[in-house]
Image 1: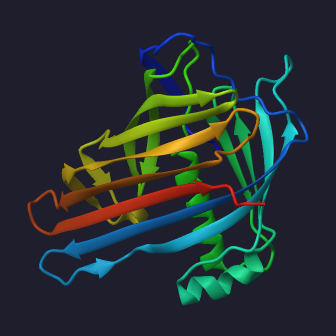
Image 2 (image 1 turned 120 degrees about the vertical axis):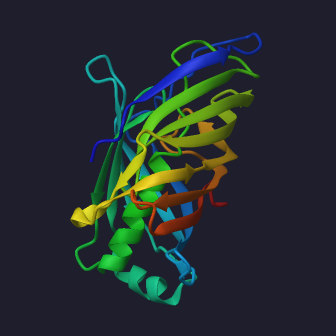
Length: 271
């Protein structure tokens, strides 16, 4: 599936020395990393009791291999990923994950770190609940990846990352403000602040169920990510985005209120 394009704008190039950051791991490079995601969603329709539509925490051990490196012929890195023994504290999801081991994924990544395509290949025996959870985890992760600007930057550099994101059928403008706080050889630590705003004033509901006016929409957060330019995936970090939304029928009738917290974390296990 395609991933929407990323553009960057440098606000401050940072201190000297400056250089262009390029993520270009060599073909055959392998990496082991753990991806953890969780999404908390609570909804209330009118005066009805609040309902919990949260996605349980999911921990995915990932084994990544660079199948294609950046070259003069192809300006993209192609990465194949195998999901290991995934776990969740939720009993139902946890028991379903055993048959999902060996599921595959793939990424096409540009030299700036921007992901242009996500490929998913669930294990044949994986239950739908496990397939859906893994798909959502990867979707969250690819839209929380830090991209670097084309220009040379140094420590203290600040740049904006612009991207469109689809969330529950709503198209959002996502703006990330990244700050390069540390650089040591190929390893870079970046602080990130993220804010999302809807592009439209209405939410078209799925399956022809009508539309709701977007009365209020806030979604923002922050975190930090550590990236090694010689490896295909982040080596560490966590980003939390939270907010509240209110939707109302065009005639002023039913009101739907929602609060949401999304968390994405990366960790490199000790060997």
